[in-house]
Image (cartoon, rainbow, N blue to C red; front, side, top):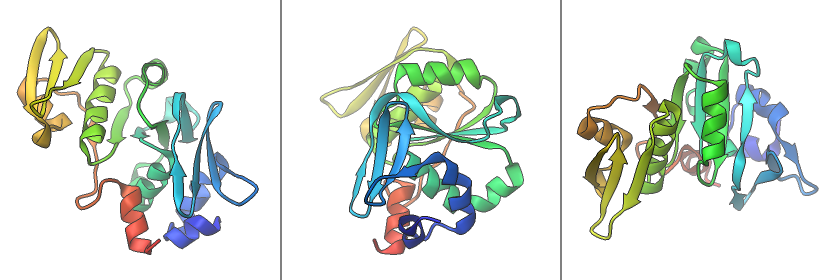
Length: 208
């Protein structure tokens, strides 16, 4: 049990699940390793790295992984798991991955090489950047390049399968792109209804 996670209201079972996948620094802050880069979380700050490697937690035997949850940070993974704990109890064998600040091609390549054919859920922010990350990762897992640009007229332009799609930024999402393109990635996304992230929701609930 970690006092910061306890103060955030993270239930003991969730803390136990993630206890092997972080360390603490000299002042007790949580440290999550992405290879040589690290994510740091303490009361009042949260630093997420830009890394070519992934933070990983959960089922390490990839052949038995039933679902893969790709998150924007390790703390987001903890928050998401806490809010959805009962459904994971039924499903079993989850593997959590965190990309850090922005998903990188090397990270997506590792996912496709090691976890092809698994069920994926993407946990990125409820803002525009998070919704763009949804498409970038989904297209990468599908091994179909998608060039995504933000136009000055507040539209998102996506070049995909030799065609261009323009979607207003305020309505852009993976689902909206699937409807526009007619292509279904078969990948779930999950976002809190009233917050930019599950971690924000966790903080709000705990009043930290």
